[in-house]
Amino acid sequence: MHVASHKPMWRMLRILLCGLLLTCPACRYGRMFRSLWTMNLRCPVCGIIFERDAGEVTGGIWINATVTSTLVVIPALYFAFFTKISLVLLLGILTIFTIVFGLLFYRPARGLWVSILYLTGSIDED
Picture 1: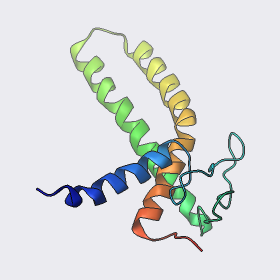
Picture 2 (picture 1 turned 120 degrees about the horizontal axis):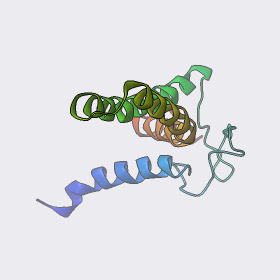
Picture 3 (picture 1 turned 90 degrees about the vertical axis):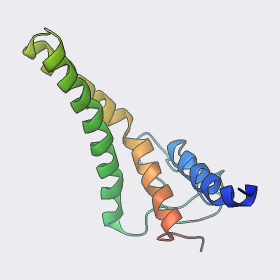
């Protein structure tokens, strides 16, 4: 297989990594967030609009909910069926994990969604 055929895959992975690292998928330099919870409307370097429509934030929330739920359900099933841990303790640990991980993964999930929007052409450079 020719090396050039891998270029689209590497480009896609690079753009998704930019999303996880909260950098602009277009220029790779601008920061997506200006504060802990506030995303920049535009890239401060190249000016690309990160989320053109107000409803686009739901994609990042969906990614966060899916990843968080997956990371909770799989261990919950394992511990519930294959260990003797008490149900109250298990629910307590998983509840705390869900809240903490959901908050910590909020920004990377939004960044991933911006990268997906960029890959699909929903946002592009002005």
